[in-house]
Length: 114
Image (cartoon, rainbow, N blue to C red):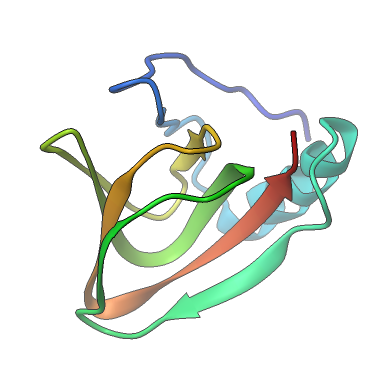
């Protein structure tokens, strides 16, 4: 199943995609797409309910697919909430905050080092 990605970078770090809602099929296609695009194998991350992570940045590019729950990322004061089926990317060095929903969040994440 090919992935249909949209555009619309917010604050230079993220974009969203609601193109598909079959999470199982989207997850498999997403993992394959990560490898094609030079990211490491997608890892499943499970974040605790209401977990807050203050300002930080990563030395690698991030590409992630939310599979359960909610993840809110704040960049330059702008909050964007991602839900199952949303894909976001983040450039290396992008300073951001993370807040996970009342049921936590699960997402598949790939990393690509510069």
